Length: 279
Image (tube, rainbow, N blue to C red; front, side, top):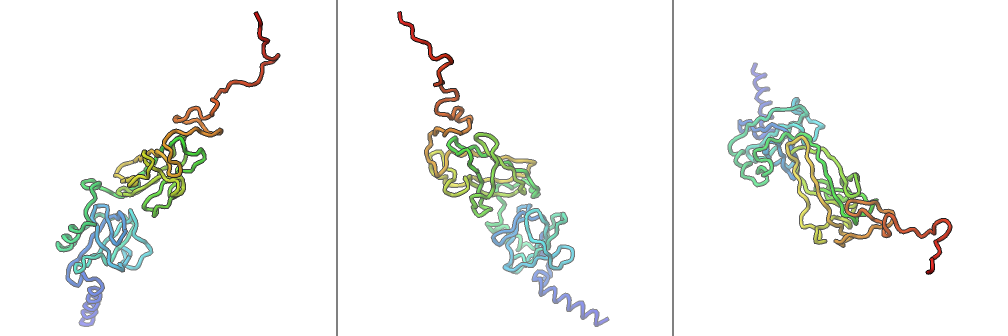
């Protein structure tokens, strides 16, 4: 009997040393669906965020053993927080849906609430976000000076500003379109290019915009983001340019041929031209 008691106490001591929260007799945790993990913080779809320890443990939610799962949007997790450092020392991950559950001390809660990086974004205050996939439609209207065979892309901060991150499909003479599925709560910036930073969109004044387009994925069934390209950095002429032969008519340039769609015929009619009649 005494041996079992000693073994139990030894196991409890090892667990307490491994998890500082247990050493203080307090179960410190937060369970919910992940929104993002970046820059040393873990964000939940509830709007709560906690700072990660330098080397957090990733474990299986059900067994507590090491897991091959990696934290990413839409996965569910239980964050174990060390009350002494206010850091998340362990994330228990699972693909199974979990109910939001909270158990942390007031000092941890106050530390998280007063940290600027953990404040709820204005877009999601009062709006429940589940991280569900939302079809987002991007429609880009290009200027008539855009080459007919041009490929148009969207570059985002998520892609480290890769100028060819997302390719759009041409749907008519002046518009390109693409649809991507993104978790609700996603916030990012983007700019339109023709495949390189030498051919990026510019503003109406012919200068590069000071800030990129900002976009936020709402908790909706579908969302659209229309944008207009006023000009390209490798062609800063704001006036309409005459299209070259072989160009296609567009709503902005319905008659692209310099001689018109029906130029006057230069071939004489059968029998030759009529002889002028003298009076």
